[in-house]
Length: 315
Length: 221
Image (cartoon, rainbow over all chains, first blue to last red):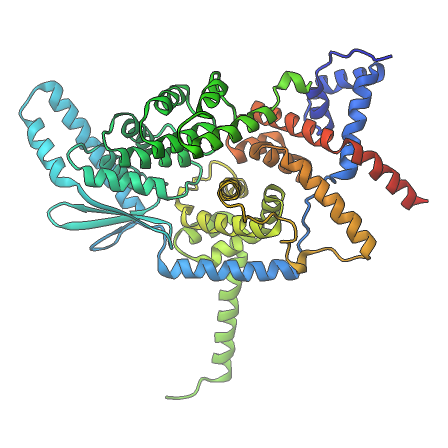
């Protein structure tokens, strides 16, 4: 006779992996005494361990590790001699700390500027002009061999800073380039760069991510939108997209006449692990898209969605 | 110019020995500081504490040595070039693991796309370098390779995140809290991934487990 069991199996998995607190462990212990289904389930976890042992599947010996270490060391040295992620000005090397101090000074100036606006004085205009003079970005480049971003900017003369996305200075320079309406060339280069580089873990709520979203939604240049959506793919990785962004993307997927842009939007939408409500219907519609690549991708995404069975069904 | 005396030579040798040892004597924060200033040797020392484990994590996620090695090395290079962003808010090992996991997940995504685009894409089977293959009799090798293919097939049913969580928990024994930090999501989400992953692997290997049990008992007899 089949025994009905409504007990939560997730608790059993957590218990099996020693991740339950004392009270929960006592509950599971008691349950295992009385519930045959839970007992069988728990035993099956033990059986799984017989096939997939609780140790790494690879055991590299010392000789292998030595050769891997030597190869890594040689690559590290190559990078080290080429450059290091330190901030450099065209006139020479300065430490990141100095640039950070400069950023603080710039922030203070910005506050004074905002204060000036509220005070309604003519000083605001002067500061606005001097801020224009402070940084007009002329080029943004990414050096693949070192992983460094180089921002060329003009003050009274041409200068350059280098660093990574981890540097506040680089991020503010990129944000400046992305939001500069009067400089589409810098905007395009910055967007392109962000689409090109691989990200290390980064906060998707940062200011330059908002700037990318703005470009995607509001820019008239399809090329720029295309780079923006590629950059957002990298920022978000397979994390869940914010709701406002996924809704906007869904709308754009159905309305954009550009198939390249639709392909990238579909990729950004489907790379998120947890599909949103309405996504399945959208994908079904996409399987009839005029573009064969989109049709194929939508079918694959639908298959993947089918494979991620709802949690309730797994219980 | 006069030749150095024996005592001068000994002093020089002592100094150079001391210099050679200096990296080994440094603490982790000191090594990090040095590496941040461009000392690649300090970074090598830092990763030596973690590299075997990192390679194993990559292998668990990628499922084959070739891709695991690519993800591992690219991850370390990325960590080195972005070392300035390490703020010691988490342990260095956790930060490093997080970067390497991200690199592995990115690579998996690229491979998936490549396989969609190119029909010539080769599967991972047979890509393990000979130096890493197990030794043993032909029968043992057949059984082992069949079993590992079976395990890999069951792991392919997992999403990238489920697979990462399963590898980190089941094979490496990390706490859920640590895994959450490594893959950058909430602990509750990690629990969910772990449960889903365990369910899928358990189901996929259900038939195999009993066979494996029988084989083990036969071996004992």
